[in-house]
Image (cartoon, rainbow over all chains, first blue to last red; front, side, top):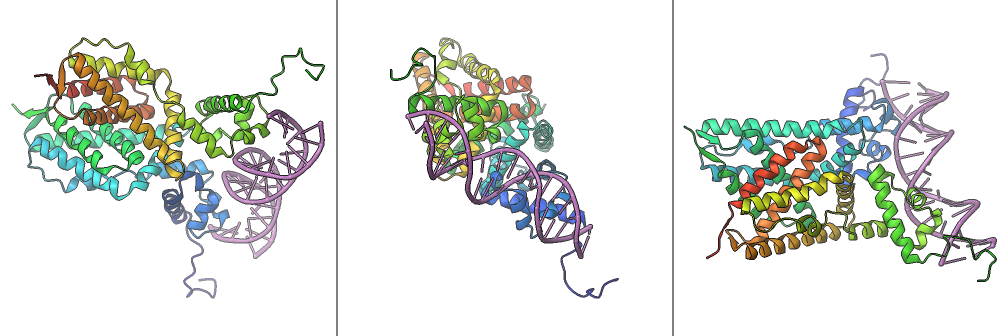
Length: 209
Length: 209
DNA sequence: GTCTATACGTGGATAGAC
DNA sequence: GTCTATCCACGTATAGAC
């Protein structure tokens, strides 16, 4: 303690790491609320209750913030969404439950999907960020594939196409339903589509042996 | 002819309508090349070889240009893509041909998909533009539904789900495959997904009677 | 390490000459 | 109707005081 203000609950002298975290969180809030275009470095610092100058000793550039945002898991947490799904139903019922669990998370936070879309679009334009959407997509596919394989073992099922192919289709159809829903906000239609997809994907399973 | 320069091939005194067209076309070129963020009114006017001031007596604001862009059919022309598909194959073969025809158009012009995504994301944020993606999506669904019904009649098929539901799934799965491909640029995987989808959707058809 | 002030470019939009 | 010059707000980034 070299100063006399040791007892004050001052917010100064935060480490650069915690500042980075707060800036990332603040950026996400601003983007969800007002869109990525409104998330200037000034707006983000204001949201984080930091002076504007703080930005550039936490990030060398704004692109670095974008990269940090894409590295955090903005997307739905598959483990959380699928953790509660009962593992002993029929394949069709199982897949329906899976998709509905995921869908609830989407409808609970539409802004997250909007921001994710904006961020991915932006990254696809910047050569330095282009690999990030690819990585995120790959991670999603891997998680889905692993889940399908685990489920196949537990329910004593096998798939008539490679599990990776089925994962691709699951992810693609879900992503497409989200896009449609963001435009129309018609949740009923989205659910109908998901149910149909679940029934279709169930036809790609059969008892093992 | 009130001036002495009657013989010159001057580009002046264009009607506001043709200027609007040229600005919209120029905007699309700039966006495809450099992304929507780089498509400033200045850049667009330069691309259209017009002075910057021309912009604001063709459009009251930049939002008006966005609206004009979304009104033009940036998306794949379904009639053109599907016109060449042979109508006498099996349902699965027919659907494969359909999806492949569409997919060729996507891979032939990836930038169009990037711009479309950027434009839709932008419109979803602006209350005044929010209805445009909904309209475009609706138009796409209607066209797909009409096509499915026509195909059903010609091939003497019926669908085990409403044609509108099937159209939703076609559009959603396709849109999802595009998203994945934009991130990964893995055309082989995209085609595998599309073939699987075609086979699945074929199971939703049966001979009429 | 922290923050203020500022530099510098660019954005959309407009006023007013022609 | 057409175009030039300009306005003003805001973007990222940095210099330099504390």
